[in-house]
Image 1 (cartoon, rainbow, N blue to C red):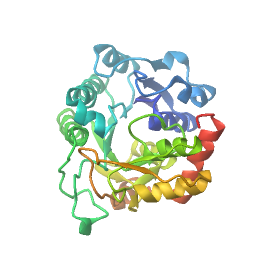
Image 2: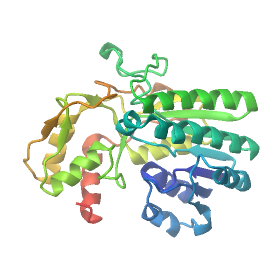
Image 3: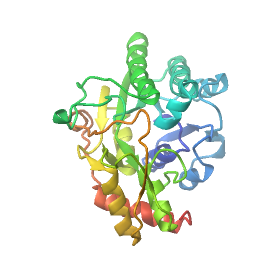
Image 4: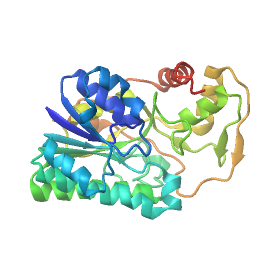
Length: 316
């Protein structure tokens, strides 16, 4: 089928584009390259992605909407976003430009293009806010109470997708992602603790832990996430968690990476960041029921793959 991926040159998006091409789909990409990289699509090019299928445009602009209308994709997978909690707290307007205005522009263009379905990347790590630890791992029925502007935009985004789809007759799914990690994640960004820590440890530099390091996240491997999006092309509806159901603390991540990199440097602690939740993990029963999906890559297998990628790509 014809699939258009916004944010397709990014970390998660490029893995999804690869997978779609392997399975024989026709793929177009819209990405402004603010966080994505052209080299992330090197494998996609070897699989048949033409340069004319990469459109370097801001999703909040009319030119990107024109591309979607012209491509007439059967499914739009919307990954493009401002991805950082910290950035959203410093600059809520920037966050809203990409994560709200950009989303509405994409939805409108998908409607005009006659698309059958929109699949949206929401955030299971932020939309639920600070849950009662006794309720972990969270099901999708849990209250939504985000503590950051990023989380708020992702909560609002899923509701926009639902309402827009119901109003205009599109199928829809919003995948609420845990903390995605894996090769191609930017180790110099503001999000992606596994890639950031791995690069610093390989370079012999200490890692910065914000707060006491006991805050937990649900880390899910990027290939598993790409698999969930592929399944959602023709299955699933509404909000669907994509995680592992397992809590892992920042200090546990640091310890695992220290073992895999052969370093002993202790982390440096700095004050906790605004907007960050204390504990989170995601129940994936709905993903199993609706998508036939379960996570396949445990953290013990995924973390060494990040370290190997950094070494092989000379990013250490």
